[in-house]
Length: 423
Image 1 (cartoon, rainbow, N blue to C red):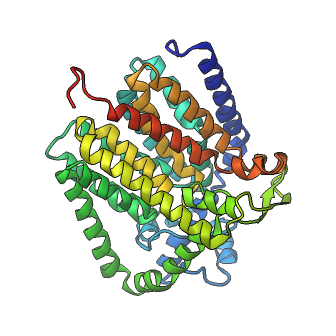
Image 2 (cartoon, helix red, strand yellow; image 1 turned 90 degrees about the vertical axis):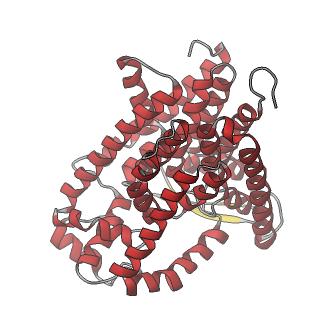
């Protein structure tokens, strides 16, 4: 933090307090065993597939059966992942849920340790002590903590992004193919990594693009070979219904640009957790921009389209100078552009934060602001309860603002001509 001025250091310390404080408050999730709600859905989906059923939707009475046979006593949120994802996790269902949850947590911590080493390379951080501090910052980063306490897959997606980015920075013949298993797992659990493929094409990273396309081909083939009936039902009924819901709902935790516009353009009535986990509090506000749902939806689509085209032009014209940084910029664009972006997916801000930190100078000021905004986004449920209108609906977009600030900082650095003034 030596390069940061006093005011910027205050921002970083405030952000550290928010990230670290919220991480400490969630530690009780892991005791007496990790009560990972979203991993519970993965586990339940794998369990019902092993029994010959389908998780789309959950069979009636599944919760009671799982509680009796595996010790899973958590509520089951809807499973949105592709059918291959729970199919891949079937071996975990041979363990009771508490043991499987511990194993899942350890696997994610191992992934995050490997990601920390790659982030240190990008940020140009060396030395055992600094690496240990960086690992602590990664673990307490709000979206990462949220992913760990839910049992989500953000560490897996972070590892995929970093592997691809490092492959662009140091091209090797085999780097295109080492990421194929991660591609398959990443797209199986979340669809939005498919948005990264056009970015690789814009960067003319043909080998890495070929690896991603091969992974998609294998993913499709495995679905139709192993799970044809469930895949057909998922693709024709379940997924379209979910896509329509996410595109029009403007859910509180959704940090896509379109969802934020929807929250601002129509009256909202929400139920959010209170200070106690069992409490629910109703919150409502009028439209800040009285446009209506349809107009808000189309304005969001227009803004996303314009933003994606602008970044695509930058990647095509300037991305070859620093393909790694340009790819991380495209990943950020996807977080805003995809119709549904949960807050834990903002773990993918870490490569951009590390890249900007490694550039030094004023780029580190951008890191300070982005890091703080990501921390404020961690407190979304608090803001909607304590802030009056119009600040409450605006505060639900702190995550959107974090991505936007980092994108602006990266675009500025990537647009600069190289030393010597050449275009």
